[in-house]
Length: 133
Image (cartoon, rainbow, N blue to C red; front, side, top):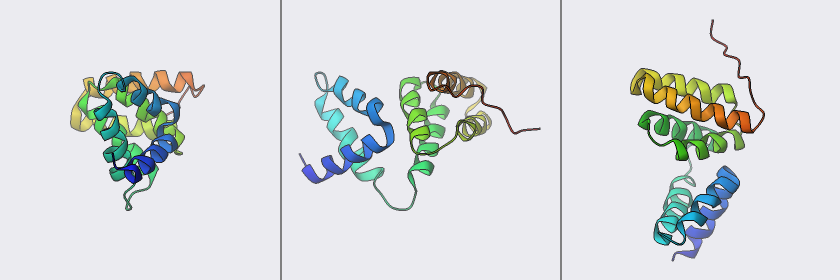
C-alpha cells in the first residue's frame, strides 16, 4: 500500500464526503478491500487532490456525471452531500441536474432530482426555490 497516497486520499475523502465516504469504505472492507483502497488512493489521493479545480467545482462535475448516468443513486447521494459539504448550494446542485436533462435526458435528471431532494430533506434544506423565470 502506498501510505502517502492513502493518507492524502483519506484526508481528502473526509473533507469532501465526511461520514458518507467512510461508510462506503467500511462496507467494502469485508468484500472488496482492494476496491476501497483504490477509491481512497486513486480517487481521492490522486484525482481529487489534483490542482486545477477547487473542491466545489469537482463536486459539481461529479454530481453532473452521476446524474447523467441515471442509475448511480447511492453514489449520487454521497456526492450531493459532498457538494453541500464543500460549499455548494442546493440551488447550484439543482441547476447542474437541470443541465443534465439536456444531455442525459429527463429520466436521468428526474432520478437525480429525487435523490437530491432526499438529501436536502435530511439536511433540512427544503424547499429549494428556483431562480428561473
